[in-house]
Length: 350
Figure 1 (cartoon, helix red, strand yellow):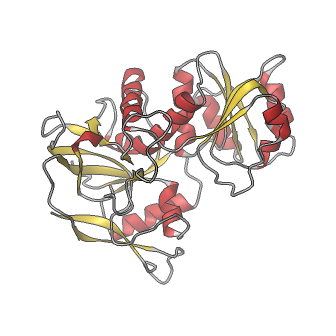
Figure 2: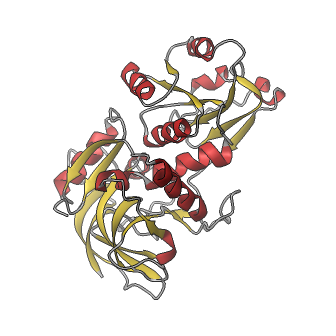
Figure 3: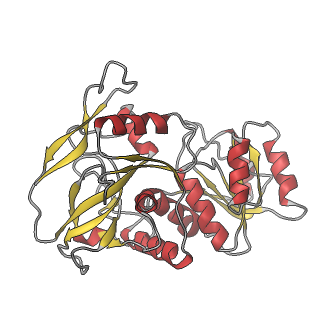
C-alpha cells in the first residue's frame, strides 16, 4: 500500500531547519494489510510535543524512514478484526501492545504510534490492528476529533486511574495550556472536582478559569505555593497533583497536600531534578508515574468524552498535507505559545 506521509529523516529538512532530524512529505510504501488489520483513510492528525523530542534527537530508540504522529481521526475503509463497518468515522488508539492491565503494559512490548516499527498518523492512509479503532463521538468536528487520542488518553489515566480524583476533591494541574493539562482540566470539571492550575502566562490562567478552574498561580513566582494555599482557602488541601513538568514547585507541594495525597507524574518538561522530599513521604504522599494508557482506558476515555460532550481545545489548524504546512505546524508548536492542540487536516475538502 502506498500513502502520502510526513516521514522522519536523519537530516534537517532545510538549511534553516532548527532540528537534528527532518521531515519530508512524500509517498511511503507500507506492507499490505493482514487479516486482522484495519485500513483508515485519515481526515486529520494532531501534533504532540513528543514529535519535537523526536526531531531534536532526544527521544529513545529513534528509527528513521517512517511516518510520524500518534493522533488521528479517519474513515474506516477496511475493518480487519474490528466489528465496525466500512465508512464509519473512527479514532485510533495511540498505544500499541497494551490491552487492559491498569498497572501498565508488559515489559519491552509497549510502543506509541509515530515511530517505527509502529505506523504514524500524519498520512493520508494507514494500516493498524483492527482492535485499535473505536467509533468517533459524533459531536466532535474533524479537528477536535484529531486532537483527542494521545493527550486525552494520557490525561484520563493520569487523572482518574493514577490520581484517583473524584467529585469534591481539590487538585492542582500544572502547566495549563498543554494538551494533556487542558484535557485533565476539562475532565475534572465535568466530574465536579475543584481544579487549580499553574502557568507562566496570566492569559492562560485566565482562560483556564473561564473553562472551570477555581484559580491559578504563576509557577515562576517564588511565592507561588503560598498564593495557591491562599486560593485553596482555610482547611482545604490538595488530594492530588497532576504534573507534567517536574519543576521547582515540587519543593512547595508538601505544604499544599493532604496526608496520603497523590502526585500523578506524566511528564518532566522542566528537565531532570524532581525532588521527592522527606516532607512528602513523611506525610504518606505518593509519587505515581503515568504514561499514556491501555486500550481499555482509551475506550473508557472516548466514552467519557461522548457522555459529557467534551470538545477538545484546538489552537490552530493547518489545511492540507503539504511540506509547507508540516514545517509551519512544527514551527508553531515549537514556539510554545499555543493554547490547545495543533492539527493538520489531511484532506480538508472532506
